[in-house]
Length: 211
Figure 1 (cartoon, one colour):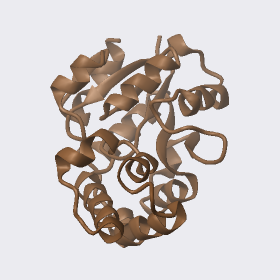
Figure 2: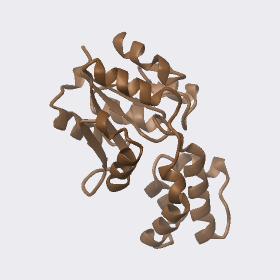
Figure 3: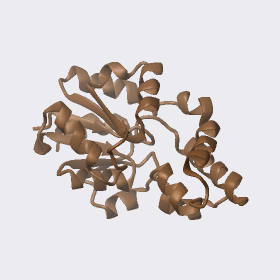
Figure 4: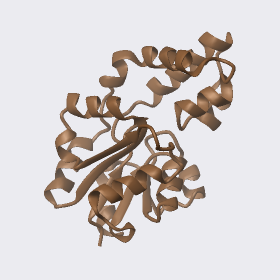
């Protein structure tokens, strides 16, 4: 029986796909002199450290990161929720599920966003990038969320929009529901072995019940 749900943030609860891609392309263009295409960016898109390493490794990381973050600016904070996000969180919390955010975004920025948008109340645990954690697809943050919640893998399920979400969940021994409104296609989620695939958050509660 599922007791805990681990939510990815970007591409799953909030719609930041275009914002993040634009910021990646901008940072690479500023420091490389040439704007990468989406195809060139795609292999590295799951985390900004990978974009830097893959496309701008000759540039000081802190300088590159400042360019990336400054381009995100307030657009990051005001990024809209996907349809049904708030209603689904409320429904799941009222049903007694224990909810956590597990994201490869930076911890301080994640905490700030959840509070700013008024959804921090739904999450018992927030696990995001800080010293000692590797970004997804490493299982570090999934394992940490389960540790803080005190939930076993068989009682935990994750939801995410990227191949790396599925890979991180499986590496941590938990199931993962893929959602298609973010960064990865249905075909990509299927190929990496997502345990279920949905197109809208509206169908997520019933999918969890049937897992």
